[in-house]
Image (tube, rainbow, N blue to C red; front, side, top):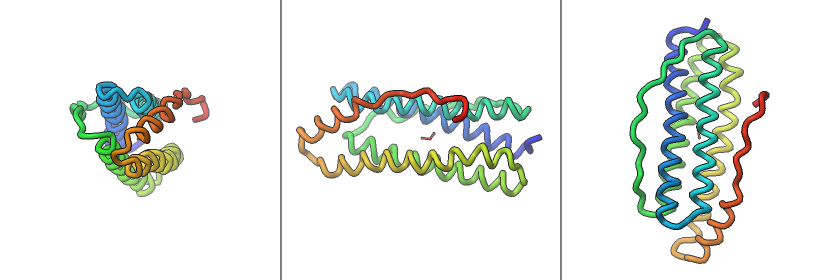
Length: 170
Ligand code: FEO
C-alpha cells in the first residue's frame, strides 16, 4: 500500500496535470482572440493531452488502492502580451512540472515503491519530450520576431497537430 506521503504527492501531481490542461486551454483562448487558429489548435491538443496525464494519476491511485483526492485548481493566466510570451510562460510551467515529477520519483525511490517508480518513469520520459516541443516552438518564435509572415507560416504548421488518444499500454 502506498504511503500517505506518496499518496499526497501523487494527488498533488494529479492536480498539476489537470491545472496544466486548464492553463493550456486558457492559452488556446488567447490565440483564438488573436486570430491564430493554428497556435490555438496546438494548445487545445496540449490541453487534451494534459487531461490524459491527470487521468493516468487518477487510474494509478485507484488501481493501487490509494485514495484519490481532487484538490482545488487555481485560475490560470488568461492574458498574454504575445505568442512569445505564451511560450516563455508555458516552458517555465513545464519545467515546474518536470521538477515536481522529479520530487515524486525521489519519494517513490526513498520508500522503495517500485510500482510507483515504474509508473513515474513514463512521466520522466514524457517531460523530456514536452520541454523539447515547447522549447522548439519558443525558438521559432524568437527567430520570427516581428515577421508577420513567419508567424502565419508557424500558425499553419501548428494547425496540423492532432490528438491521439493514449493506448492501453501508454
Ligand atoms: Fe503533463 Fe505537460 O505536463
